[in-house]
Length: 243
Image 1 (cartoon, helix red, strand yellow):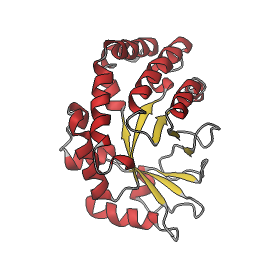
Image 2 (spheres, rainbow, N blue to C red):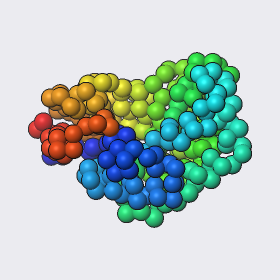
Image 3 (spheres, helix red, strand yellow):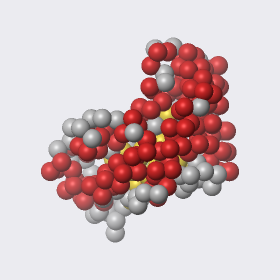
Image 4 (spheres, rainbow, N blue to C red):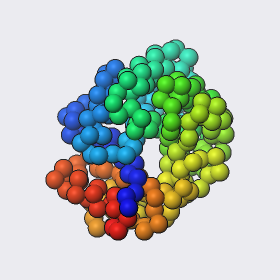
């Protein structure tokens, strides 16, 4: 019996398929990039983080949480960011593997740190971004939010996803009542999260860490420099419930 593999392999695929050039620089070809990665790795789901795209609008804000949140809010208001996301989602919608792609938003605390005002601003901006993602790329949407303070500000995001008919996948926590799938963070192998979900981190993947026998879904983090000759064999092993 096989498990479902959720491949957190963006950096690996960028290094292997695009020689390190970020696909978000050409949003109309995101669908082609994801199709290639899915076929290469045999992914059941491929995680597509928006982090590198969002960070291009936050770089000048430095490490100040409120400045970063306000920069994201400004980028949303100016329209270019949402247009870029819309173009990428449209490309995914017509791609052969689009149904297997899970867009992943950075959480409020990833954007704004632990500042209360920053978390509020970031959450509202992320809501607008989610609205740009969900209508086209329906099915499953991910949220990367390892901090409890940030998670407390995500209620509106889960409501937006529910209204759009999207299930939410959460990275960084073992349990959250509004998420359909919860993958804890780890460098090696995590305990089981909600939905029978386990994370195998890049260190665990490159070693001989075995999956939990009860795991139904495994998020696998591939390092950018993982050895291609090793990757497919290791993925096949983790897919099997006997591993």
